[in-house]
Image: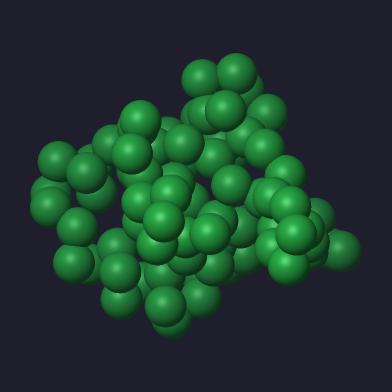
Length: 85
């Protein structure tokens, strides 16, 4: 699986504090092995976001993403629950 990144994700990721960036990278390494590892709390979104998924970096921050038809993943956004959904 390749992980592609939307420009919005990159912009917001760069603004995060270093410790949170490190935690996100740690979670990504788990995600690559198993996107549904229970530590990630991966879940499908609802309503107008129902085509997207999210997983937890910590209790506050999430990564919103989409599974692409070719098996790749597109990271769309990163932030708090209120920012991402």
